[in-house]
Image (tube, rainbow, N blue to C red; front, top):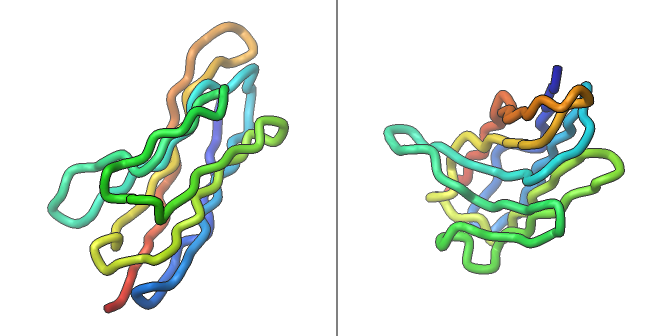
Length: 120
């Protein structure tokens, strides 16, 4: 009913930048919050950034001003601009979207994940 398409991962040198994108499609009536999570090998999945329907944002402590989350409500798209990347940012990044379907059912869906690798 809802599909997320992620793009933008890849290999970058430390200090470089990447931009991740996520597009939600399907029987979406409204979107509440949209988030990026990441999971490194052997570690738990952690919140990178969240943005709600009022554009309030929240970032993981490790971001420290390096990343910027943004959304386009008209297109149901989400982005994450990542600057000053560090080797410890290497992980699979997942998009997560929470909202409502046309017929009043809530949804909470995850993207397939996109690999970000930062070489030191």
